[in-house]
Length: 102
Image (cartoon, rainbow, N blue to C red; front, side, top):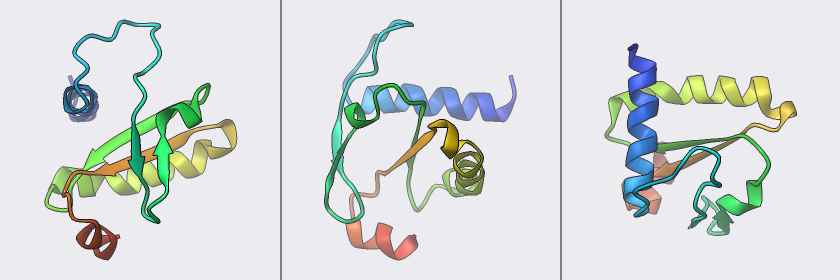
């Protein structure tokens, strides 16, 4: 198994563990969640139903997370016109440090 597949699998498992979802079966809708965006407006996963969503959980202190950002941006640029949505969730817990980083 290559590193990208491991990172993707870890991200998915971590995400659902973080939000308290332990068993999601193939074909089921992803559980909804709502978080504030960089401007403070709430964004819900359900806003993007019917689209392909890449959910990236990252932190400013996470080297592999930072390394993945340009790849996620390239994917978004390439597939945005086909409906790809890239949502990133920073788990640092400090809005200003996240905004300063970006």
